[in-house]
Image 1 (cartoon, rainbow, N blue to C red):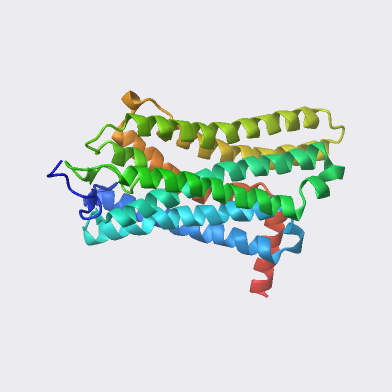
Image 2 (image 1 turned 120 degrees about the vertical axis):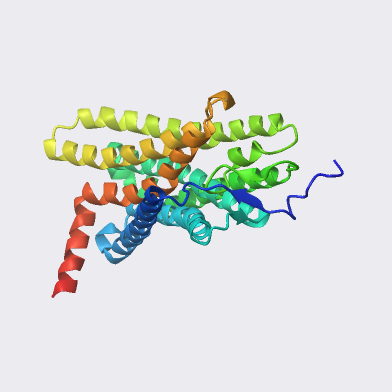
Amino acid sequence: MGNTNDTRDVNFILLGLFNHTQIHLFLFAVVLMISIISLMGNALMIILIHMGPRLHTPMYFLLSQLSLMDMMLVSTVIPKMASNYLTDTRSISPTSCGAQIFLFLTIGGGECFLLAAMSYDRYVAICHPLRYPILMSQKICLLMTASSWFLGGVDGLMQAGATLSFPYCHSREVNHFFCEAPSLVQLACADTTIFEFFMYICCILMLLIPLALILASYSLILAAVLHMQSFVARKKAFTTCSSHLAVVGLLFGTAMFIYMRPKSYHSVNHDKVVSGFYTIVTPMLNPLIYTVRNSEVKGILKRQMEKLCM
């Protein structure tokens, strides 16, 4: 133990997602472009919701929070990855690494609970429309949003602190493009069995509980929609809910693939690709899914574009 390096003194090395071949340079440019589109798309979504008085409802407030989380997720991962690639310096300090783990898990966990809140909002709007102003009041909406951020933050703080508390006395090369807890724990020269069990329990709490609430909400919504007499009302309900379910599938599918598979099934390359999809592609798809399938958002966007062209 006398030769064990202190994690506070020695940097980690991120091996990254790309090398400097022509094809990888092209892929890096594509990733950078997707990230810029993601930031612009989510920022536009927040601006449109702010500018459209008809969108000042709990559903769109929660959607603006989802866009904010997606912007933060991209900003947490991509700038450091791009900087390391362009300058060919792959090191990251333990402090920055811990910050990445904390922010990544805070945002990821927060999104899980936020999507559960959004499913509850749709359940109340469709199944109890007359009681909607009471069951989804501004106070309740703010409480659900704050709780999502808080629960994600608690999970991020615990896992970031525990991950960096391990001694890393051998290789500090992290075969990833950002600091993610499972990738770092593999390098620890200590018994991490208890921590891995704790991390698995956290995943159950942060993933399966929100997912169960979402599935329960949409089961009740489906039953209510099937009993609707109006075809227009049924179509509107299906359109709104299908957009939400698409986002749920993207988020929970990738997160469960990374965090809930047995250790023996982990593949570094597969994990990097799935993490890349979650941190780079999904934040771009979310505003597209909600904009393309939402007539109110498209209407606000069209009116603002017409004003700019006049």
